[in-house]
Image 1 (cartoon, helix red, strand yellow):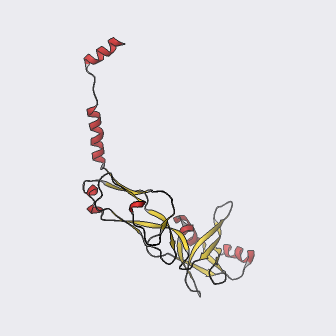
Image 2 (cartoon, one colour):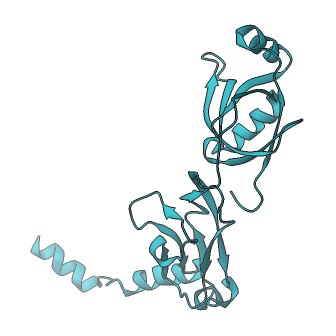
Length: 218
């Protein structure tokens, strides 16, 4: 997630039970429920096409949404379950949890790279290889950072950026318990080709005499 929290539009579902849910599906909607917080559970419908598109984008269960329902106040939610048809694997029901500002959640946060042009390795023709464009962090719902910032100023060819090299947003914690790689500056392809050629050139080539001596020894 980067920047603005995405909106998710829904409408209040009239009626409850399996009959109302089946009718919603026939109307091209996916029934769902919003629960948690201080308010009562709210039965909703979400347009199938819009929900399916969000699911295809990935990380639906770890994305914070601003749910907009006509006649209701906007609320921050995170999906806790997506039920699917066992045959078609299409969504048939979704559960959303309301979040307080102090709620702890796990989200993927975008990594932003600064001063790429100032990095000595880039000036030499090196290539920035991004291993993790996003990093999963545990944060509070009221203090979600827009990005994790990595400053490339001063980095040379061969330098590696680990998560331990990055200053995380205040209150945020990495969910993976190891010092993983975020990015590195690799040598330009032309330089790698030259190095390979040098290795071949340095290889010892047997002379005719050497070959004859080796044959005699055999």
